[in-house]
Length: 252
Image (cartoon, rainbow, N blue to C red; front, side, top):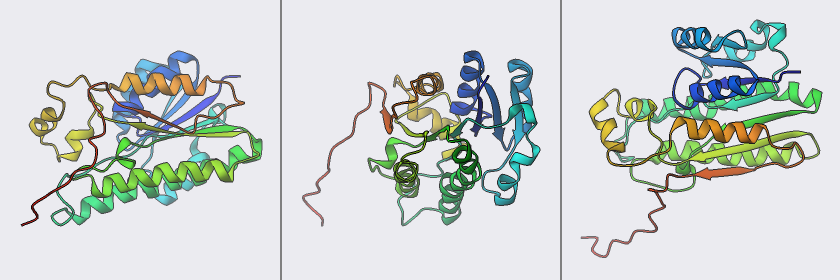
C-alpha cells in the first residue's frame, strides 16, 4: 500500500521540492501551508496523490483538528515532515524586534510541537512511522544575528533527540536534518522582510544547497531500511564551513 506523508510549509522552498520528489517516488502527500492558492497550483501539477491542506501550525485548535478533515484515503499518516519554519531579522539581540523573536518561537518551536503531538499518538498506536524535522546548522553553530533563530533550531535538535529516547522500543524513527546555506527559497526574502536585494546578496557568488538537494535527502531517508535510524544529518555546501572561535584582543 502507498504510504502517506504530511509535509508542513509545503507551498515553497524545501517543502515544495519534498512534495514533488515524494510524489515522483510513489507516495501520497498531504501538503500543508498557509497559502492555499500555492498548494492548489501544486495540486494541478502533482495530481490526485497530492492533497492541499490549509494549515497554520501556530494555531493550536486547527492543528488538533486537522485529522478530522483529511479524507480516509490519505490516512493514516505514515511520515511527518516538520518543515514549516522561518527566520526574521539579523539584528544583534539588543536591537532585534521582539515581534520577530516571538514569531520564530511560535512557528519553529510551538508549531512543531503542535503538529508532532497531534500525529505522534497515531504512529504509536500502529507502532510504525517516521518523523523528519528540518533543523539547521544554526542550531549547532552561532553566528551574528542568529540569536533567537539559532536557539529555535537548537530546540529542534534536542527535541528530535528526546523523541528518539521516548520512542525507544517502538518502530518509529526520528531524524533531524540540519542544512547550512541554502538558496532558491524564500528564506532570506522573509528574513529581510521582503528586501529582495539584500536577500540576493546572501547567495551572490556562492554555490549553495538547493531545495532539490534536501528533497533528495528526504527521499533517501524515507526509503532506508526500517531497522536503522539516522539520528541527524548535517549538510553544508562545499563553499561553507564553521568559522571557528573568535577572539577580540582590544575590548576598548
